[in-house]
Amino acid sequence: MAIRVGESFVRRCLRAPARPLLLATLSLRPRAAFRPGALSGHGFPFTPACSVSSSAFLDRLLKGKMPGVDQGPCQQPVPPDRAGQLSLLLRPPDQPEHPKTLRVAVIGAPNAGKSTLTNQLLGRKLFAVSQKVHTTRSRALGVITKDDTQIILLDTPGLTTPFKVKRHQLENSLLVDPLNSLREADLVVVLVDISDKWTRDRLDFEVLKCLTLNPHVPAVLVLNKVDLLKNKTLLLDITAKLTEGVVNGQRLRVRDVVKILQKERDEMQMKHKTALEAQTGEEPCPNSDTQDQTGLSREQLRTLKSRKGWSHFKDVFMLCAADGEDVETLKRYLMVAAKPGPWHYHSDVLTDQSPEDVCVNAVREKLLEYLPQEVPYTISQHIELWRETEDGKLDISVKLHVKKNSHMTMVIGPGGQVMARIAREAGEDLTNAFMREVRLKISATLKN
Image 1 (cartoon, rainbow, N blue to C red):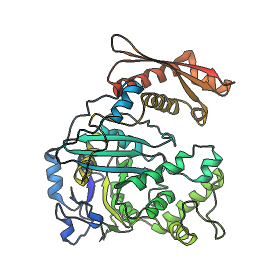
Image 2: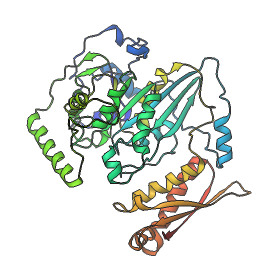
Image 3: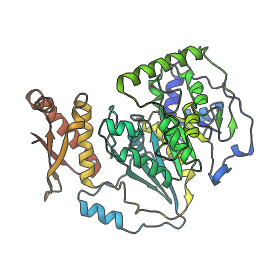
């Protein structure tokens, strides 16, 4: 078992004497499985990067990065035209002599940071990121190729329920894509936002359902947004809850570093959840006369409702997905975990998204960022112009279809400032994705 922390996170903790990260709170008995290169269940390779009780590893971290880590972002661009992207996706993989591959499904509750993590792993911003929920509407694929190893990242929508999909008129892909991704995956990364004090002490119920339906797929737990957690001493307490005190088959013994009245805190969280469900019209707990659409029995669902964590995680990571240095620890782990097998894509492939999809996602991200409440969810897009110029630039024109006059005022903003800002920032993201200058124009019209 290893609990891994990003280098920059460790440095921040060690620079803050007022709130130190206590490292001697985990008691472990050494076993053969902890040796580098040892294999755990399901033939899954396990190579520890660090244990929170290992001061030697922290000393190594403070001296600099470990060798073999790719410090720079990927250099290949996304083809700026649909035909070029399709041709690249259909091109036979340029197999190395001893290829290795790993399919990784990234799942979690809405707004846990899945797309942010995927972008950091890729070294390029290809997936929309927003503080609002349901930014990712369908599954998208990212590809990391380095030396003889290819990692396929399956970025999925935030897990939700049929009740919410129907109530808020969301796409069915929000229900189907995460489950399909898990069935295809060699490894599952479960992302948890630990900055949310109301939800961080238990795994999302939909996440638990996915893990229960796919117990044969190895899973790792990633505690995200550790930079926003003021009291770092809670990290091990949260880890013990989300793993049910077991990681890689090894039981943890975590001493409380801060005396917390757990019963009172649980009661407070339960009151908050009950009040929130009453306000939002949350669906009731399944009763004995109904059955879950996934095929889980009523008894299994009742058991999951009472659980807070998952006891089959192979590893635990603590990081900030927005920090590239932190993510390198996880990226290195994925590279080591790759299994011998043929590549699925040519080494120049970065994503399976079409150029138009990348553009639409970039614009939607800015709409979610700068427009309030439900407004961005009601806006649809249409690409009117997509043209490559003789000097290698890319001209794109996007038309926004807005439902209400009041929404139109918000989209345009005072003196057109909001729309101009959306076009400018989305254009910068597209310039980074296509690695050429993108001149993006955005206009808006009322829906008929």
